[in-house]
Every structure is written in structure tokens, then in C-alpha cells.
Image (cartoon, rainbow, N blue to C red; front, side, top):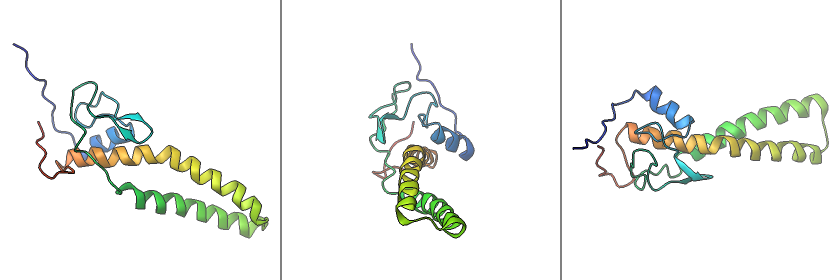
Length: 130
């Protein structure tokens, strides 16, 4: 008789770490994404259903204020130090914003999904966690 594997509860820090590594919040093994920001329907390792896990717009304000704050600070430092023309600002900061978003957005979304699982919350509000 085969038993379903048990998945011990994790601490908030462990769940956060799984999100940063973009791994399944239940087993910690399977990949969370099948493509950029596209969550898999099920975990490839433990078969956990991701269909009710949705971060929605949760990561957006953190990305906007985090990336925007860093880039704004750097742009002000460059402006006060060198006073370059606007095209230089544009050619520096736009690629930097896009690069930072590309690097951080999947991890931010995965952290929200991992914390949603950790706190037993879901998009439907009635998910059963086993």
C-alpha cells in the first residue's frame, strides 16, 4: 500500500527561501514556473495543484517602490555629480529598470505564492491544504 508523503510545516523564513528559489512551497523540489511568470498547473514533484495559488498584483507595489527607489536614487546621484544630457539618463536607467524587473519579478511573485501557501490562503478562499 502506498502512502502519500507527508510534508512538514515550514517556518516563514523557509517558505520565503523557497519563494526566492522559485520552488514548490509544499515539497521544495519542483519548479514553480513553466515560463517567465507563468505558474505551472501542478508541481512536477509532489503534484500539488497551483491553480488556486495566485499572487495577483501583490508584488507590483514592492517592485515599483523598490526598483523605482533604487533607480531614482542612482539617477539623482548621477545628475548631481555629472549633469549628463537627458538621452544619457534614458540610455542608462531604462535598461537598468528592465533588467532589475526581469531579475526580481519572478522571485517576488514566487515569494507571494510561497507565503500564501504558508499562511493557508488561496485565491478561492476555500482551498484544502493536505
